[in-house]
Amino acid sequence: MTKRGRPREFEYSSIVDVAMKTFWKRGYEGCSTQDLCNDTGLGKGSLYNTFGSKHELYKQVLERYHEFGIKAQQELLNAPIALKDRLSNLFEWALKEDFENIDQNGCLLINAGVERAKNDVMVQEIFSRHIELLKQAIEKVMEEGLQTGEISKKQTAEELASLFLSSYYGFRVLNVSMQNRLLSEQIMKGTLESIFGA
Amino acid sequence: MTKRGRPREFEYSSIVDVAMKTFWKRGYEGCSTQDLCNDTGLGKGSLYNTFGSKHELYKQVLERYHEFGIKAQQELLNAPIALKDRLSNLFEWALKEDFENIDQNGCLLINAGVERAKNDVMVQEIFSRHIELLKQAIEKVMEEGLQTGEISKKQTAEELASLFLSSYYGFRVLNVSMQNRLLSEQIMKGTLESIFGA
DNA sequence: CTATTTTTGTACCAATCGTTACAATATTAA
DNA sequence: TTAATATTGTAACGATTGGTACAAAAATAG
Image 1 (spheres, each protein chain N blue to C red):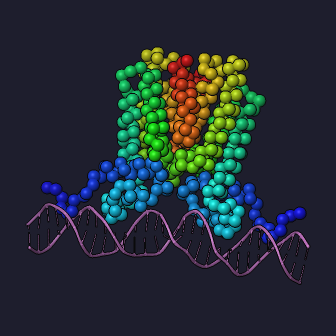
Image 2 (image 1 turned 120 degrees about the vertical axis):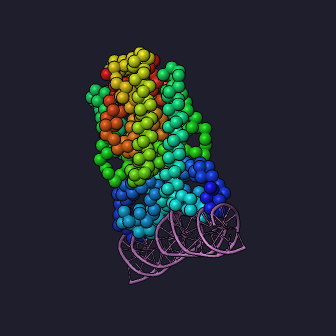
């Protein structure tokens, strides 16, 4: 029942994982197929036989990153704890991502979006899908907050979600480019207090 | 008194302006010296005789972009009008930048920062300088607001400025990657109302 | 076993990369 | 006019780009 022919000497998903780090560190234009071969250990033959092109491998990487990233963030936002703590945990999660892994580079989807979304429909599509889901999850938090009174604002849940979303994305951009933890702390505090009160 | 030798057939600053658009559209890694020669009309000889390297030209471009950008934004933030309108105008200015020039690509400094700040001290330095000045200008607005009562919050001016700054930068990233005007409007509304009240 | 199928590594492709070399050109100083 | 100097366009540099060709290798089906 196994298929005929010489078997692969690697696992598809673990190659995607390694390629993810390469794209993450260097960007799409900034990394070569040779870089990808070096890091994954695959030869050109295997790489192209499996993925067809650098761009298709990039797509698989972004899909995988999106899949794991949205799940992690949704879990934080749906945790059975106080709403403010959920949003705070999301900030802290991102802070770790952005400051701890030195050879990676912030949020891969933001990097991809900024570098390519405008000239690459595939990137724009995955990015939009990710944001749509993230925004929905945040909006649910805001709705719950308005209902329970944990948030006492005159704004709609959608407006509050939009505010949080943009602040969260600005936060991530500034984390990477500024490397200024004090600023990051101020953003977290300022954003949460503007939603929940000081 | 003019210097000896064959005179230049172009103006330095106008070449930097053209190169700016090229880097803006394609990114640093994504544009070649040939692209730069084609767009500016200069030959390789002139380009390298004048700027020395692609990287140095990029630096000149970013310095110039920073210079004009910070001035434009400071003017909007110091205008003698209601504070909320100043911040609103800043959003509207960015909205125009991000949606109207189709062949450019959002904010060049954000693009540069995301693509290169972590691996390029020059980019990181200019980016930080820009943010520092922009944050100061926003902070002055918040201070004034707290003093006059236009802003009635328990937060410090610095926290409010950090919140606005991050939201503003997230706004710009989302503008370019999502191309969703409705979302942009929600962000503007949500951010301003969270500072000034609904 | 043999035939078939798939993956592997290597050699190679034309095109492009950032950069340099350099002679021709165009100016000023003397 | 001549010497000195700076800019120009063109040709070329070795290295690298994304991608292909293809034979050797390794598995299964019969």
